[in-house]
Image (cartoon, rainbow, N blue to C red; front, side):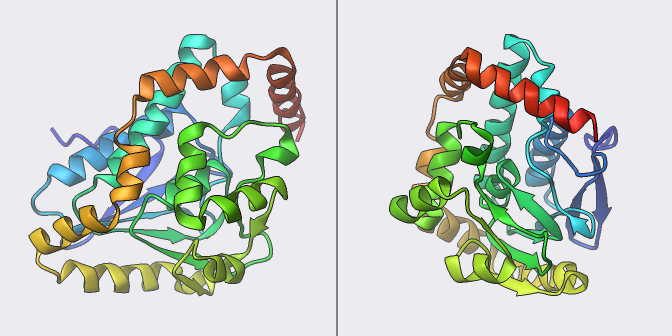
Length: 261
């Protein structure tokens, strides 16, 4: 049985020797527990599949992912929240340890939790657009950024620039993200997937053992902040911190406002 045959939130496009993982989870591709379970299952399966030499994580045109599904989070009990955060961090670990080239086709907006997903890939191509942004704007929503997510953001921007951007709730369009080093190419939306495939095919030509070994060497810092962690402990700490009455109230208020739209 194909381990990825029962996916509900992803659409897999299988090419000759690589797979495009297209997020297909509602109107804005929000990140909820079912999506995370599907992503974890897919990355694990593709990593083990010797016929697959690389992968692309993509969204739909103009919508990569709207970030964490706040309505979903507001509906979870403590155990459900721990499961959500454990699974989210497991996905980050699966992406960082993916032994093959992993390219991200950022086809639209990808703020907050979606930004962190993109930053765990090897190469990022982002589409131009007024509403197409990456970055961490949780302060604007009175929300805490979990420790691992802070660490990933700081790994890419440096602690000083990351902290300044978080304080400003700064979101970056594709050209700004390119200048900041958050993405590697800024192109028209219609060209994103094509450019991502072009880079993937080029990288797949590198001898697998050479690529995998070099990836581990160059990303020791990212490996340290994502993989060498006690994610059960981090998930519990995140759940407990966000159980603060004010923060829990903000999440429910924000979720309610989204439900009225």
